[in-house]
Image 1 (cartoon, rainbow, N blue to C red):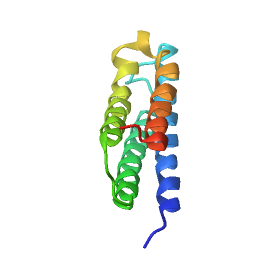
Image 2 (spheres, helix red, strand yellow; image 1 turned 30 degrees about the vertical axis):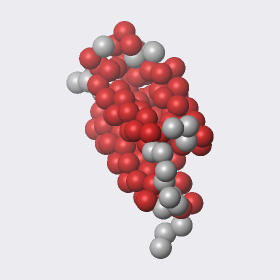
Image 3 (cartoon, one colour; image 1 turned 135 degrees about the vertical axis):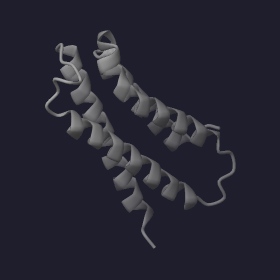
Image 4 (cartoon, helix red, strand yellow; image 1 turned 120 degrees about the horizontal axis):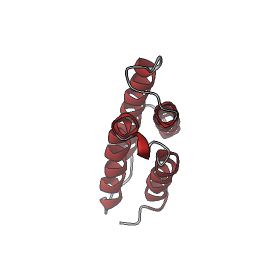
Length: 122
């Protein structure tokens, strides 16, 4: 059986991949780059997708190991954050004027997800 700590590390690696990929996309788009002109489009897109997969798999693996889950509303909140981070990859190139805003929004979303996981408020 894999220890929960391993899943936590995988989860955090996934978060780092997603944040790094979104940051790269946002910087490129904020500097006037387009999707077609991006030399790292495949890398950032793949990193974003792999990161989302790691977050999801490790998150559900940790969830399965929780003793008597009780109220699980916080999980729905984390899934909403996960969906928002997944959809955020479309923002920089479709709406370049919002690319800079991702530098504030993405860390705030990660902070919300972390707060939900740590406090399990509902």
